[in-house]
Image 1 (spheres, one colour):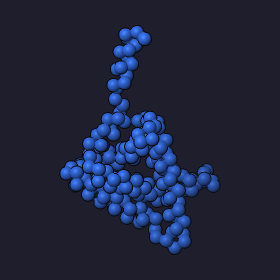
Image 2 (tube, one colour):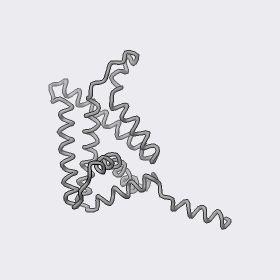
Image 3 (cartoon, helix red, strand yellow):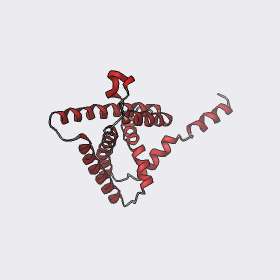
Image 4 (cartoon, one colour):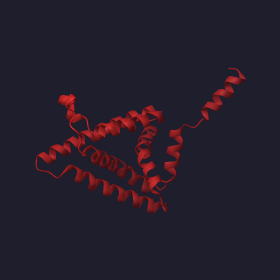
Length: 176
């Protein structure tokens, strides 16, 4: 290997990707072990709640979809945009998030069935879960002694699920 190719290989190792910077920034706000467990719980709950609140916004009837009308809603559009953004950051993490959104979709359909069987209104369930999750997040930030601006909180909503998957992938030694 020539000296030039060695320098290039070394410099490529030190190039930090955008996803690495985002995850590192997110991790700085989640230092205490006890709070990390709180965030491990509240991030998926908040993601599910947001997915549900978007899912249950009435969507216009598109006759050309035929039997597939029920599979296309505002959440489908939201999911496509978010997955595309995640794909630009890390393909592996975007696939994990696609899987996550699939689980959310399945659970949201189960909420619809529960409502048809006499259960509570699904969007209210999602709102309650979201309020509890935000409360848990705010408690965690308070314990950390950190004040998070609204803009920072919204960025954390975007990166938080990837942060969870990145921890799991690191434990399983899966590159992302």
